[in-house]
Image 1 (cartoon, rainbow, N blue to C red):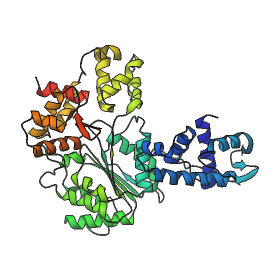
Image 2 (image 1 turned 45 degrees about the vertical axis):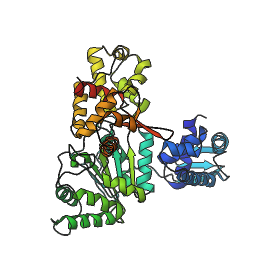
Image 3 (image 1 turned 180 degrees about the horizontal axis):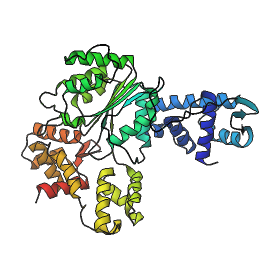
Image 4 (image 1 turned 135 degrees about the vertical axis):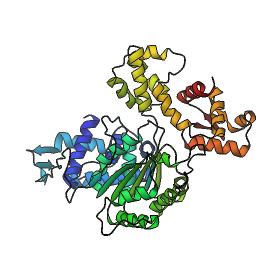
Length: 456
């Protein structure tokens, strides 16, 4: 039996016992076990603790043990499942599942049929996605989806920050997550802050969605209190996109614009007050209060979304580019960023006949005009000190330590430290630890952008 066949059998057995299919994390644990991974490796892949992986695995082995009527463990699960498949497991017709000649599922529950536009019923969530973009393609983010699902469903996390540079796929991942976990909620709401609404406007918009027993108050404190009551009364998932639009340009990362400071209190209360729901925010940069809250609050989590990795080959395949042996180099050059690769693939199609090898013959990364415009939006937010650091890092051929930067730039230690910390929060600078020394550098795209815009 191949891995997929073992997983399929395990899913059928679990479904027969519980009426539920394997969850993503359970399937990942089983796949990793079959492939010889340790719990610590699986935990690292999914950004979870080894203890949590062991707990989920133990529960899975217990269910399989109950169904198969013998002790199933990490050490023997594949052997037992393969033996069950070939000797003891059979399906009779479409309705009966038999193990060791015992019918354990005379009427197998059927998975509900999902229509494209389900009507709201007492068992379906109220979904209001507002002006969310339509998602046409989704490239593999299995481990991130599993991590987020576990945080929200199992750990009951109240506040999650999904961070990543523009174009990395935060919105797409958030909307895909909705499809995966929507049955766990009464209300699912998506809103974007792209036009920088005040907290009063955002809260008023959110409160209008719930059954109203009274007029919506105008006082922000009362609005927050009313929303928290709904978050306790119902299980809600609220996704707030483009949170970076609340922050100042020309200031260090995470500083709110004048008139938007109330969001800081709002996020803090969501994290600290007891309720059954989750506020999920997407941003280019991390709100400062979240950085403080997650230190001591188990209900606050942050996930930084990075390279799409080899899954990005699907983008190049869709664009019908040639020279597949060079695709991995192209993906690495453009940091596995889906948007950057989409824009670059268009250039390769238009000017290089679709040949990735010919494109890579160029000495430096070619930055499409639209890609540069995307980066312009982020660089316009930088302070003069941050920009000075970026220009200096663009000149360096190797990662450099803070003392070496200090020798060159005419900045105080305090200003330099604050500037670099802010650039790290904005995800514009890469950090590498070697021994007890921290080194800073720019990726190839950032370096080329800075040279084109600020060093000519």
